[in-house]
Image (cartoon, rainbow, N blue to C red; front, side, top):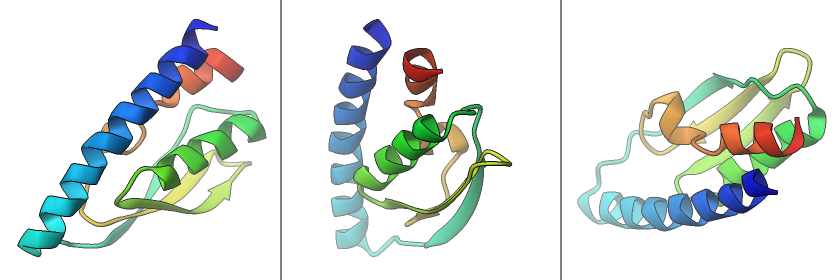
Length: 98
């Protein structure tokens, strides 16, 4: 139960942070769209889908494809980012559902 609560808190914080980031980047014009493949530790399809939906809910990112067999999610971002910045909630989903 701890992981579920922590996941929702982290998700809300990340959505708020990303909203401000996207707003500032839109005003400044510093947008460099890129598509990245992110390997995930999550094995269950429901966990991967929740992670992909969480990425899409965060402004500035969009999940394009989920490869369940290879545990890879393709993500479009408005700027190049580190994997940890795109999926900070993965450990919480893993603890909650895996």
